Length: 113
Picture 1 (tube, helix red, strand yellow):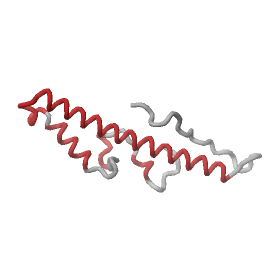
Picture 2 (cartoon, helix red, strand yellow):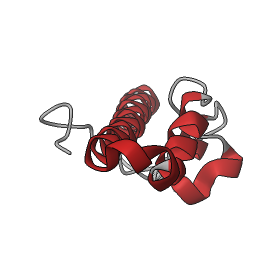
Picture 3 (cartoon, helix red, strand yellow):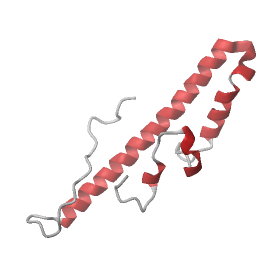
Picture 4 (cartoon, one colour):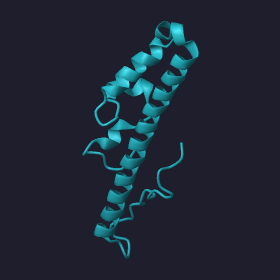
């Protein structure tokens, strides 16, 4: 999967508060841009994972035709499970099926991993 934008904002380095030229608003603005770009990136990853499962299911059904109900059952279950996600994002309980870092969508996320 390609990145949806050419550049995402890098994580800003928090300077020491007594450092010369330290600007609280500038750092907070950069941190918000970083958090917003990470959320967009993770959402794109979740959507691409859903598309991949959908495509695998489609190919499995085309390949197995008559026996597709039995042979593609695991993909069907995965597809149905993912359609129940809110906004295409897996819940905290579904970490085993996705690489999406769901904790960054929490309002309390401070930009740290």
